Image (cartoon, rainbow, N blue to C red; front, side):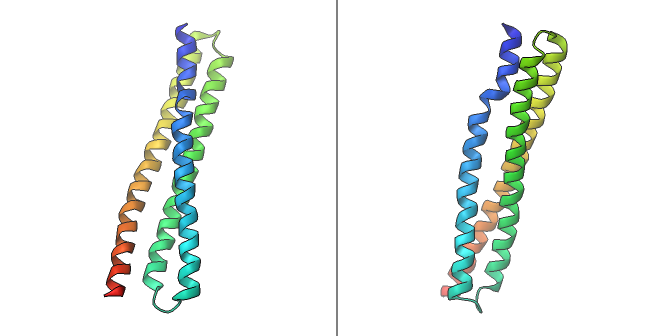
Length: 132
């Protein structure tokens, strides 16, 4: 029973990672819309803001890559853990290592999203300064 719990553990992390992917994808799409709006309606006065949006876009891309990677690693950990569950020592090591890698990817993606949130505030402040 213990080996089943070990290889199922990374699969339990999938819904959380999936929610982060959904949220991040939606926010990334909003940047796309904002860039098009600025280019169409305020092409001359928005160069600084467009620069910030480009940096935010890169943060989102990097976060999404890490989130997708974490989902892949969690799925691989569950699959390999299930396949090798008869070999308890190897199965445990494989599953634990891959789960740790997946968690590290989630953590790195979270750090990138924190950086993006800080930059997002700078963009809001730039918008407010332009309207003064």
